[in-house]
Length: 635
Image 1 (cartoon, rainbow, N blue to C red):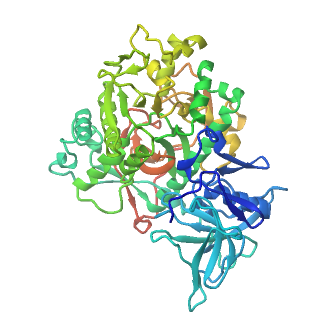
Image 2 (image 1 turned 180 degrees about the vertical axis):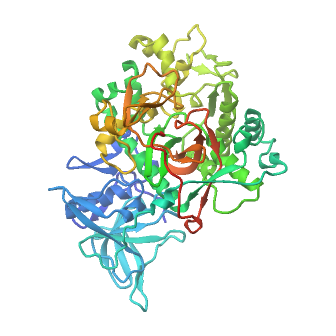
């Protein structure tokens, strides 16, 4: 394929129905023409189609123009294969959507959507195209985000794919990429012949299991004291253990492969939903006011969100997972923890014990972090800022190893040690290097507390970023809120991490199967069924109250967020397995699911002091039929 790509946004040609197809060669996007995140959003008749000029955006725009319906937002293109309805725009009616597996007796039809699985050329996301012509030996398709070349003047299709009919009459389309695979095609039709049934996951497969392994003779073999992150971890924990509670040091948990797939799908979809809600909040001052953020910081949050290069590296969802379903509690999009435990220690824990059944749910996390850092745009030194705290140290060392694997030079800064100013008024480290790229273990709320205390006035905040050389030593806000400094996680992650976003999510996606009802005011129905109060900017399980359906206080935690405004969330307990309440955490990297772990506590509220114990994913065939029960009062 030629490397002479058409510039991003170039008209490549017209698909049937006179629908334009554009180049999505992102490397050539013009910063003037596409200056911010908003400029990448695509609308047709005021309806959001997707992001320019991705494959899903084109597929949704084509069916809207030609067939008058749209399909729901999907986290990944391959998720379209699991949809079973589309929505007609003129009357909001739902039409059935049939999914036909590649290699079926039922051939694709012009106008159906061809769906690729994740992998190979379409790693992580899959792909979607519109079928325009069907022959015995080939199909013609139109698509975006594969080939970035202008079509010949008389051409109305992007590519031809080989197809064939076997002796039984099954029709199979061949992917042109060696490692790619085509799932099949979806057709809006009442005719369900040869269509894939939508099979809901057996609820018993959503249960967690607890088990134990015999101790190993030399536990130190599971970690390497020569590695900086391993050494820091063992120093903090007193050895290569995941808990200092001796009674639990051989305990682990298992999750079925079906449950792991459901969690992956939920994490990807929820990330997209949280991003939609963040966009909604930052467009509306009344909603933003709910988040109890200093108004002086609002322009900087919006600037951070609109900066198209200011992407998240990683975050963590917290779930309750049981036979009752998969429900998300919150998204720790800013300064999440447990990466080292999930991405390295739990896998080494099983390896040291010779346990190779199933797979480690954290095995991809480090590699995914490396890839995210490669895409981050860091072009000088990455300053890793942390407190002088043992847990933060191994957390920082693990992330430093990932960034260095990506080819990024890193320096670790303890607190504000050694920081100063250069002659141009920029913050520099002890060696005089400017701090332009920062990854931090601190939550943004820590910096905002300083802002509230010291410089909440607009004029004081405006002074941050001035080019005069200040007399005082740099403060945390002088680093993190400086215009020329790119911080990970970016400032806009304050919004999805704030509990005030949960009622907005519920309003945008009411009755979504992975959401819990959440409101700013306590409703009668919620009061009768039981609820949880959460401070909008709380962290680590602090200042949470659980109230049951009899209006009895079940559990209350202390902390420093008691003065924060609160939201009310439907009570949906954690499963209790033996003596432990168990919460599942999934890690997103670059907006996609990467890893899964569990944290446990004898209390129904998981806090910063709760243990992370090893987790293993087992095939469904190895899953017993009965499960642990969920405690209705856990959260």
